[in-house]
Length: 302
Ligand SMILES: C[S@@+](CC[C@H](N)C(=O)[O-])C[C@H]1O[C@@H](n2cnc3c(N)ncnc32)[C@H](O)[C@@H]1O
Image: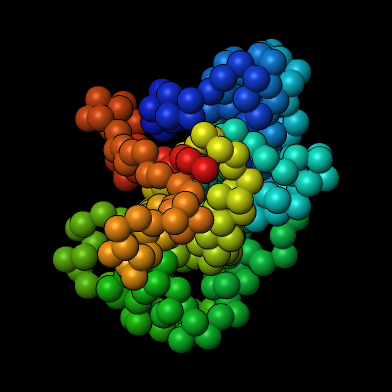
């Protein structure tokens, strides 16, 4: 089961009106989308996901609430293009709840988890070609070191990457987890599971998570209408860094102009940062996934 993170905070922050047009870029198991649909009785919801299992289950749930929605089976990097097909060029709210859902992690055949034995897979989109098996068995040692460092902030990237290359072919998640364990110092094994960061790094690489998020968020800023809001929940410091960088960039006045007594309207920022929220202890105690979550909200002001 998937427990939605920062659900109330996120829904409140979107300032939903009865006739709002809203985009949920990460439908998942429709936790957020269900609450949105309940509030926009005369509006419309467009919901993206690239995982067909999630879409089937979310559709069942949304059907019970209303019919004013459309599920778009596509990567959210295609946000503008997919909405254009629906004749939509402006919307009132956009939500991202990034990363993988609990069912994706729990379903052992998806190969995301280092605790459940499965073929190395980790694709959110089951039709995509690149999978974890290809990354683990074909990337050069330098490429592996690079992704383990960049996406996993893994300090033993070199010894783990060399261990992987030496033990190829590696077919399953547990084989990989054991090779990682064998290539880190003993004391490191006592901390969190030593495979955690490497699995995360491979998942980010397979799904190109950081690039597609950055590209999509820039499109979202163009699509959002005046007074509309974008809410982003991240679970990883690199995702949060991208979000913060973009939100800062569009909400600040250029340094050279900030010295002027009056700033012409065309040079004033079009967006205003509304809030940064982290889950309360109570939520973290009930849902371990919430511990690294951060919600950032921005509004288009002109
Ligand atoms: C954390 S879950 C969302 C959970 C949802 N908010 C809920 O409350 O049930 C993230 C979902 O986004 C999807 N997803 C992640 N990256 C995506 C992308 N680039 N394009 C489309 N869907 C994506 C995943 O397949 C997953 O189902």
